[in-house]
Image 1: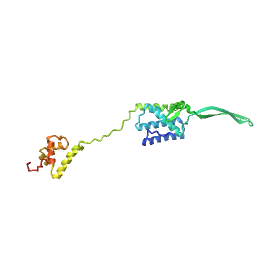
Image 2 (image 1 turned 60 degrees about the vertical axis):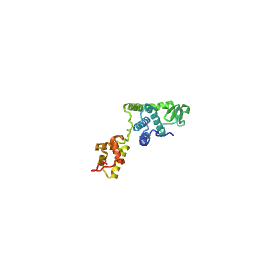
Image 3 (image 1 turned 90 degrees about the vertical axis):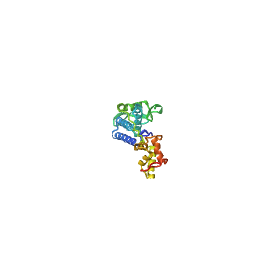
Length: 242
């Protein structure tokens, strides 16, 4: 037996669609008016597509959803499958000749159509042309309604793509410079001001170096690197570089 709910729907969308279809089935159980139940099932599928951001193309509206509706209707017993053909009425006479009354009557009968007549497709089923035409006629008003909705509604926007951009303060070269600077200050029990004096750079130059605004080849960068590497001995306040 085909699935009641197609694979296009999953998770909460699938559960909500199933709930809407069961409401249509409850309508059938209470008052089995086929057209009303088919139309309610059609709306359930169309709304589920909108909730899951799937497009309401003409192929979906005129082919996919009618096939899903038919599949649901067959599984729930709203529609017979295989299709049935109504046979000619068989006439008979019933009554009681002894009592003197006779009443003619006729009873319609049905029979499944042959497999060779199932030349059309509706969802996952093979049906006759006239069976498909009858279902499509019953759904015609909903197809027209949702075609209008698809034309008047803006296309669904894809979810925004969130890019994780590493701020400049977190780049590896900057972290490397700042890490070496803080390690030097801790190990030498000194200050950044003392490093600036030794390197003969001003405070703004040091800030530029710390924020990676000075290239490795600049004179100021080389002076600071010389101090951190020990190439230039640290000069404390009150002492001159030897």
